[in-house]
Length: 378
Image (cartoon, rainbow, N blue to C red; front, side, top):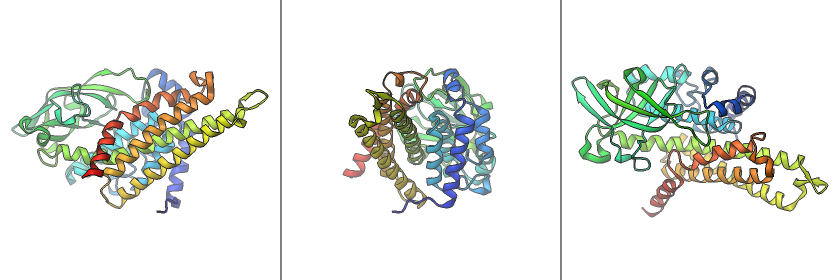
């Protein structure tokens, strides 16, 4: 399988890399400290066409391939994984769900503003009492005339504090378990209440909040697909989203690896650069091999997605492996830096903190392994 970049993909990579270095790198530690998403930066990403990279041009998107999306995630995360995560929640989940399952009227109403970055999107599945067991959600949506009345709460919602448009999952029939789950497009002005903002270990510029709904009236025309289709929609969206998260993980790992290699060549001990020591060389070799293996697995999943193939297994493999690699590489990068790696003066400290979320969000590593095993054994 040939993963040689097309000229278009090369241009995308160069454009995002340049943007990340000029617009993100100088400010990322400030954003991390204050825990605020830079909305002006997200708007600039929209101006470049990267807030809706896979959206067809007729809806105002860039019409790029899944591989291009992965490359965008890589290049952003190589500098600041938080910005990449915010984009993933917006484009890879909220916008992707609407693209896949909305009717033409819904797409025309919501996709252009999301694709341009004029509005931020959020995707709300997880609840305080239902994480990996998403089917156990307790949020409900009861049809009353021409409206669904939404009640419940969501937790750990990316972009929740800044979003104008939400895709929210709730049960329209509590007696049917996961077959009773439906998905809705909900506007913030309909009555969504933004609650606690989480004080996180990493990915701190990307806001993560609790949401609550108390008698929120959502027009029945905002139902995505049919009642009871929400859970299957979620599974499809998560498959796509996991490929993007794998790209994010590769970018994070690459950023940590680059910093470690640079430091190893500059730092001297016992009269010579530590890069001359075999222990450091072996560590860097292992890091580099794992990153490239994760990248190739992710590119394979991206290629399969572009071809319209079933990516359930490949997406889980890519997300699981790339996330674990990111954590291992970030840990090794800190170790190579020694005591300096434990300070905020060097970028590996932030990569180390940011990496942990990747083994938890959009399906834990344990859930990915279950998905992989079920595909093997079925």
